[in-house]
Length: 231
Image (cartoon, rainbow, N blue to C red; front, side, top):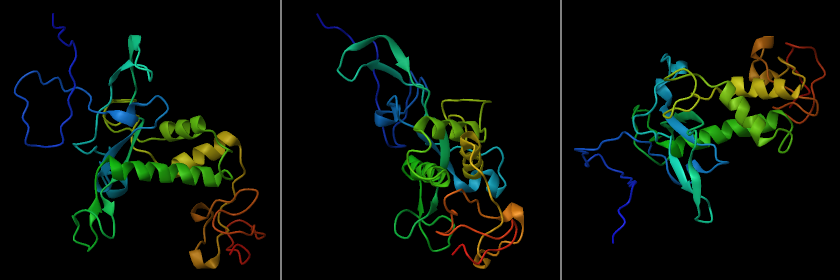
């Protein structure tokens, strides 16, 4: 007796394959992106974002959709009910310049790197900035960082969460502001060194109690006054 499978999943990495029947339009995320503790990241070309006049931002056509059913536990035993992971968590930009990898799509002499492999490092960089602004590793929990990224994301497709873009395009400045507010840290604007050209409070660098983010010495001059001490 042959037990026929009730579910078949396949992944292909080519445009040459055409699905002629049973095109279920299912989620395509797989591997570590579906791990329970992972933060999965979708991709959007940087030029298709509000910073470049496109609102709402547009996801890349190849970004992997979530909604995958997880059937097995890590030890290989089957869940009584399949778990459906809400992935991706959010989207970050791809298609930015590199010095050696990709294809130059803008004609500026620098090749562009596309894919979620490019988007995920951008999301990680924002998380690193969030960790830095609150004082370093261990001050904000991973859950707090994720919450700030999610709650400040820019909606892209359906309102709220969707399986293609998650909660939306991450907004670095808003995420940093949010985590500072969550932890109740003081903010000090406008005291960057003269070399940064800061003149208005709204344009200034953020500082926290122990040291300014842009230097190793704390400012002593008033807000909106460039500091000679923060070097």
